[in-house]
Structures are given as structure tokens and as C-alpha cells.
Amino acid sequence: MMDEKGQTVRLEIDSELANTTLVAMAVRGLCAMTTLSPVEVNRVELCVVEIVNNAIEHAYGSEKGHKVEVSVNLLKSYLTLTISDWGKPMDEGKLGDKNFPVDADDPAAWLCSGRGLPIVQSLMDKVEYQSVDDKNSFIMSKQIRS
Image (cartoon, rainbow, N blue to C red):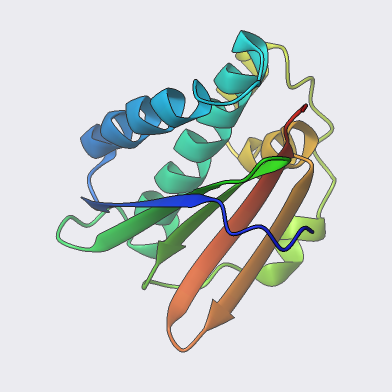
């Protein structure tokens, strides 16, 4: 990773699935400032929506009134997205579970429950999860062409 600071935007939504669209549109706009192709922008947006939905559904049990934070860091050579919640932590073993090989370019595969993390892992260059002091963060990076 480079030492460049880049530009960071933080978005905060209430844990309501309807609010996912707000985050998706904001991330799409930020990605438009990069050299990512339209296909790559769609993939990044899909990954953000998937992880935000997971935070709402799994960390908060689809209960409204909780905070979901999305941080987008734009650097010259890569884009980093961090989605954080303060709900129930994810079983960290799930990130390494590759039991669901999926075709990330097949929209029909996106609708199958339990396929979100493998799709995200196949579309992003780096994916990690951490849970520290009640804050659960899913960190994804995507390389940007110069």
C-alpha cells in the first residue's frame, strides 16, 4: 500500500434496507471520479450493497435504529471501502469459506442466499474483516488503473 493519504468520504445510514440505495448511489458517484470501467463501478456498487445489507440483516437482525457507516477512501492507485456496524460480529471463519463457487457476472447467482461473501471476494482485490471494541468492519479494496 502506498503512503498517499487520498480523499475520504464517510456516510452514515440508519439500519434500514431502503437506505442501501443512498449508499449505492453515493459510492457510484465517487467511483465515477476514478478510472474504473462502468463494469468495475457496477461490481464495486454490488459489493457495497451486499455488505451493507449483511450488516443490516445479520449484525442488527434487520432492526431499524442502528448505525451503519460506509467510508470510501480514494487513492491514486486503489479504492478502499470500509463498512462498519456495532451489532453482532460475523463469524470470521465465514470469510475464508469458499463453499459457494459462484459466477460473479451472473446476476441470477446474486439472488441466492449465502452467496454474498464469495461474490464480494471474487470481485474485489482484497477483502478483510475485523471486530474491535464492538465495532465490526468489513474492508474491501479495488485496484485503480493509472
